[in-house]
Image (cartoon, rainbow, N blue to C red; front, side, top):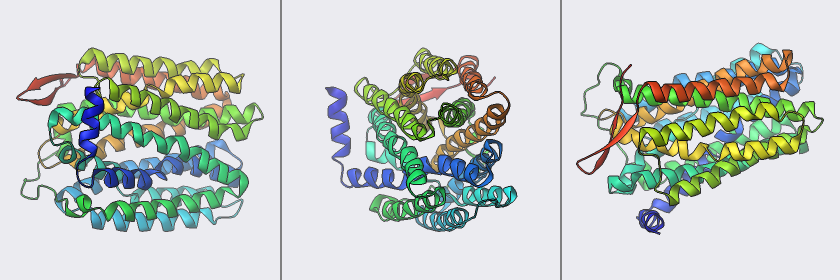
Amino acid sequence: MTNARNTSSILSAPGAPALLASSIVARLPLAMFSIALLVHARQLSGSFAVAGLVTAAYAISSAIAAPLLGRLVDRRSQTPVLLSGATLTALTLTADGLLAAGAPALLQVALAAAAGLATPPLDGCVRALLPAVAGDPARLPVLFAFESTVLELTFVFGPPLALGLGELWSTGAALCLSGLVMLGGTLLFAAQPASRRWRGEARTPLARGGALRSPAMRTLVLILLGTGTAFGATEVGVTAAAHALGASAAAGPLLGLWGVGSLLGGLAATRLGGAARTPRGLTLLLSGLALTHGALILTTGSVVAIGAVIFVAGATIAPTAASVYAMVDAAAPAGTATEAFSWLETAMLTGSALGAAVAGPLVQSIGPRGAFAAVGAAGLFALVVAVLRSVSLTADRGRLVLAAADC
């Protein structure tokens, strides 16, 4: 009950509900882009390998751009970066969506990369505002758990929406629409007073290494690199497994179940205090994530089995993400909040790119089991990093402090 009251108190702050609601609308298409690019590229080329490269190009370029755009936000403000990035991304995705069958693979990769470079750092901008919304640092883990949980709605509805539009209309139309929704949602978020007023700590001198000069931040980045790889390979593996079973239309609902599992896991984490606060807690979460996602390798003969396992696997995602995000406020050097959150997004995107790039050829040569083997290996990597780099949380003068051994 105490945690529920804390969440209610946080959300009663002026502008908080509108801020969080608009951020969800703005980020819904981000859950659509990867799968929309994947199915559109496969439709145009007939190859999962090409589709994996296109998805990887978007993820890698987004990963490169995110911390640079995040640092620009930290030194200036959110509004110009958000609006210009959203406009360019929508235009590029529309151009990609209008390509005809047989379009050169290189052109598809180039357009996906251009869209990634322009994608605004929405996650970093939203999360940089949350400490002010929370007020009391002790309530920040609960708020991050709530934000991560609500964000899962985008993964519940985004992939099925992208795939459903592709089935009912066309894969190109799904891609165009996702870009337009992102533009409209970003305009809505950027219009919120908290976003318009936000300014970075411009007087903080730039230091070599930026947010990554913190050993704790480097640890968190490596952990999310591993989990992101698992997620990217899971998307390709599930899509390929459904196709191999003659149930291509089931891929969207299956990925939606993944999001539902994460949503429920996040709700449970919110009620239990918001995040893991000890090395053992984070290790347990990552152990569960690696084990349940790796178990997908046993499910390729049945859509029902895939659905059951991916639902359970999803329950580990939001709690793990909330635990990591709640550590950033204390781990990031002064004046690098947006950049720090953007580095985490970069780690996820880079991992997603690696997962997609590896899983695509594995599907072509081995089948869906190959993709799910990569999923298990990536989850294990994240777990090993957490153990070897000894991430821990301690209390210091009423705020959370992240201590990490810099191996």
